[in-house]
Image 1: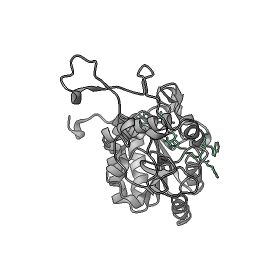
Image 2 (image 1 turned 90 degrees about the vertical axis):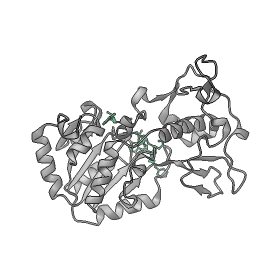
Image 3 (image 1 turned 180 degrees about the vertical axis):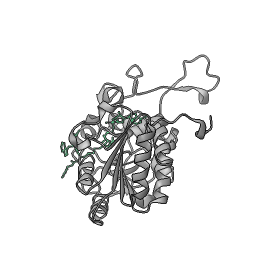
Length: 301
Ligand SMILES: CC(C)NC(=O)[C@H](Cc1c[nH]c2ccccc12)NC(=O)[C@H](CCCC/N=C(/NCCC(=O)O)S[C@H]1O[C@H](COP(=O)(O)OP(=O)(O)OC[C@H]2O[C@@H](n3cnc4c(N)ncnc43)[C@H](O)[C@@H]2O)[C@@H](O)[C@H]1O)NC(=O)OCc1ccccc1
């Protein structure tokens, strides 16, 4: 059904007042979360109760978990790399990239590590990856500063290959064998030891780890500096869009209040009205309830 014929997913009145404000806005922020990539088929953090197999995803995303069981943590991240590589950016990713080309003083603060905004050709200097990327790796050894960007090797080492269902009689060849969903607890995961895991090519000592920001770790200093310069770079901020995020992780969630303190009006786009803290902080000027992949192209039209 042609876009124009598709029934509007947002109340007309809200759409008009929002677009009127957007048109006259110059300094704009967007804070995006996992909900933006949900329509691309990627599970959110809080989806499935926030669990990966039996593990709390936020617990796996810690240096402690990697210290305890690097094999399990690498299976978690290799699975997410695999899923993200299979996924495609959706219309919300493209709509934000388009707005960035139209409004030079618009920056997007992304909590997502899935690489979909970059793949939607979002202008890189207007996209701040707060929590790193699944496709960057770095040495986990404290004394080694090895970092490698854009490593799309999948699996990154053979031992992390997604197991397939050889026993499925319908499979004609190994190639066609159905991939097993290792986020499902009923699928056995091989025990991996140090020797199975990616080693740092520089110090040859440390294990490589995903180039993401784990809980308890500082956000990338350059990214924080760039954002700070942008925030103080103008006397006011006109608008912040809070898209597909539960806004519970800091310092990322703190940018909504910071923007509001600089006069920004707040537009929230979320599938679930009750999942964004209803505190005054987030009492949005606009709340567009639904799928970001449908709403963003419409409200940014
Ligand atoms: C849990 C929380 C309370 N804890 C924190 O915030 C902690 C601690 C903390 C710091 N300051 C605080 C202040 C108060 C309280 C706690 C703290 N913060 C940290 O540890 C940060 C680091 C935080 C970053 C952690 N890394 C991630 N990701 C990378 C890894 C990885 O991805 O594996 S966070 C990760 O979780 C968060 C998940 O949130 P969302 O993306 O919003 O996803 P969620 O599933 O929750 O929600 C999805 C939403 O979408 C909606 N939705 C679903 N489908 C759709 C749809 N189709 N359309 C629209 N919407 C949709 C849903 O309704 C829902 O609302 C994201 O930020 C994501 O990046 N580091 C640090 O503070 O360092 C300090 C420091 C200082 C000095 C020296 C050393 C250290």
